[in-house]
Length: 117
Image (tube, rainbow, N blue to C red):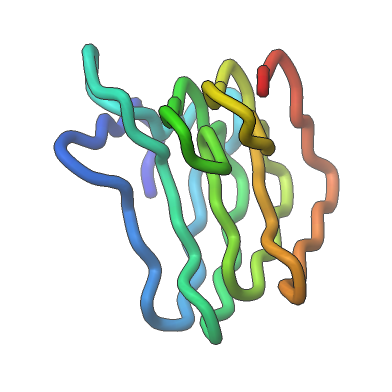
C-alpha cells in the first residue's frame, strides 16, 4: 500500500485467506475507521495466517466486543506496525489488539500504545 490514509467504512476488514499487507512505513501509511464509524480495523479469521508490515493501524473502537483495532482468531504477524488510539467498552479486553486463546501473535519492531480497554 502506498503512503496515505485509508479509511474503512461500514464493517471491519475480515481476513478469511492467508495474506500479507505491506505499507510504506508506520509514519506514512495509516489504516483507520472512517470518521464517525465505531468499528475495528482488522479481524483475522480462524485458520488463517496474516502478516501486516510497515503501517499504523489506529482509532478502531468496539462496543461490548474484544479487540478495538485488531482481533486475531488465527495467526497474526505484525512487523513495523503501530497500533494506537483504539478502545473497547464494557468488560472486554484488547483495546489495541486482542488475540484469542489458542491463536498465534508475533510482534516485531511494533508500538502498541495509547489504547484503552
